[in-house]
Image 1 (cartoon, rainbow, N blue to C red):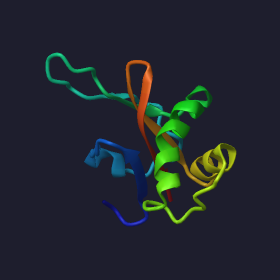
Image 2: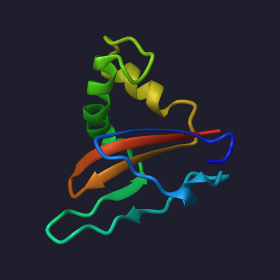
Image 3: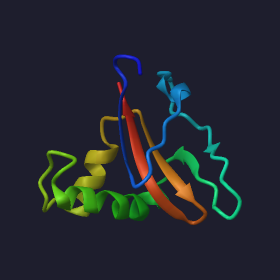
Image 4: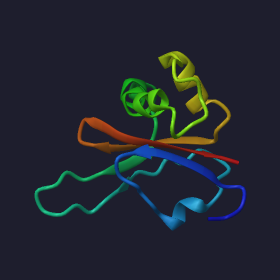
Length: 109
């Protein structure tokens, strides 16, 4: 990774792509799809949309409540957590299987 690139990915599955280390001047609009094994759903990486807030909270809440991943108050509300996750970052992504957010990541300068 290049210096100046900070990423957080909250998911049961780690996703790595060296091409994502580029620092864009505009939010990324591209959608990336994984190649799944037969019988598995594809995983899509795409920018977070306002409609994704419930799914992102479903992924973030266990990490916040556990208090082991982020130095955040474990009693943080949904609104506070989503504001923390989406404020001050250039891009917020979701990892999605058909109809379900499986992970989220944030890129900041």
